[in-house]
Structures are given as structure tokens and as C-alpha cells.
Amino acid sequence: MKTPRSDLQAQLREVLVKLKLAFLAEELVKRMDTAGHAEALPTLLELLKLEAGERHERKVARLLKASQLPPTKTFATLDEGALPRPLVQKLRQLVEGGFPDDAMNLLLFGLPGAGKTHAACAVGHALVQKGYSVLFTPTFRLVQDLLAAKRDLALPRALRKLDLYDVVILDDLGYVQQSPEEVEVLFTLLAERYERRSLVITSNLVFSAWDRIFKNPMTTAAAIDRLVHHAVILEFDVESYRDPSRRKGVRAARVQKPEVEPTPTS
Image (cartoon, rainbow, N blue to C red; front, side, top):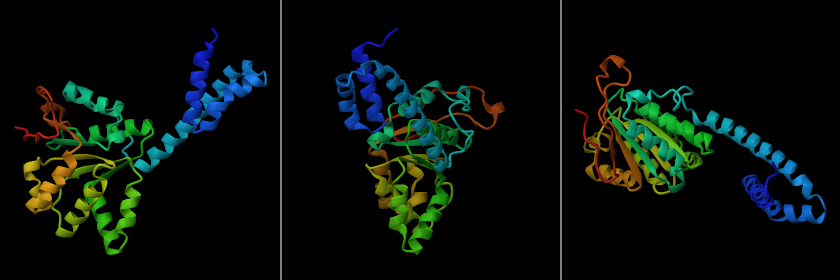
């Protein structure tokens, strides 16, 4: 069955724009018509689609290598039966909605073993497949790298490098106590990405306990304000994800608005 002329033109334009060939998108069809080669357009469309697919696969492979994401922590390996269905649905909706385009943050709270890290990585993998640049890192490791850069008078350059990532996944924020110098570089990172790039953060500590991280009440309030201004907050209010014997029933997820602080798991 032949593709209708209007559909053919629309598809050619779409794939050429995707390939960043804007001029060709405007001129190809009419010039092929003028030259009497309109019958070649379907074949040309097929070849262009193959080229777009190959480029996308190469880009994804490059982004995946740079992401440092654990290769096994994807939506395919996520034990969705151990998590409330609304929570998993929300995670998938966020990916489909392209939340990095709006510099939105995703904050995942819950006790150890609740599946926060796996979920964050699954989101990261799904975003990479869509062409977003992602970096996964334990928070303490990135803080140490930024602290070393500051000591070498290279902190601005290190922050610019991180700015290349659409999404930075900070795993286990608050897992270890921070020195004043570490707090400073962590806050600097949060401030630099505010309303510009997305963060995905996992933490065992609810906001009311974040003074353990930032020490100073004003700094704590400022950090939380920057994170939740444009954010989705999800609470993993479940039994240990790592110990199936403890899963005696999964309570409904509380998908919260950014203004509402997650409550501790009882």
C-alpha cells in the first residue's frame, strides 16, 4: 500500500529535522518533484529512517557508557510487585513526560532496602534511551570529587562538566555526615542546577532531618527550597525491597506534591 503524498512529505520532514537537516527538510520534496524524481521519495524516506535509527543507537550507547548507571537496574529488572502500582506508574509517567525538559527534580524517600536506588536507575536508563544525558553517582563520591576540585581551584570547571548532563542522579543523600567544606560544595551544586538542570535524589532522611546534612538551619531551608520548587516527591513506604520474606503486603504509595514533606515510614 502506497503512502499518501501528504503523509510521505510529513514523514520526510520529521526525519530530516531529527537528523538536523533543516534546509533539506524545506527543499527536498519540491526539488525532487522539479527534477522528476518524486518516485524515489519512498525509498529515500526508508534510507533516512535507517540512518536516524543508527544515529540514535550510537548516541544511546555513548550516553549509557558515560552515565555510570548500573547495567542491571532497569525497569525490566525492577520487581514491580514489591512496589505500589501508583508509584511505578508515576515513575514511568515522568519518563514519558520528559521531566528534564522542564528542569524538574525527582526526590525519592524511604528506608534502606525500599528500592529507591533501583527505581532511580531505572528512570535513568529510560531517559538515556530517549536521548537524555544522565550521570549516576553516590552522593559522597561526587562531593569528594567536587571538594578535590575546589582545593585545586577547579570547582567552576567541574561544575561546568556536570552541567553537560541533563540529569544527575545523587544516590543516598545524607548517608554519611558532611564536613562544613563538603556541605559547601554540595549546596553549590544544588544552587548551580536550580531551574536549569534536573536532579534525581534518593535519601533515607526526610526533610525534617536534613539539618544533619547541611548543619545550618538557613542552609538547610535554602537547599530544600531549591530542590522542591520544581519537583515530584515520591515516598517508598514499603517493606525491605532486598528481603522478600519481609514483604507481607505493600501499602499504597503516597505520591506527594512538592510542597508536602514525606513522612517517615512506620
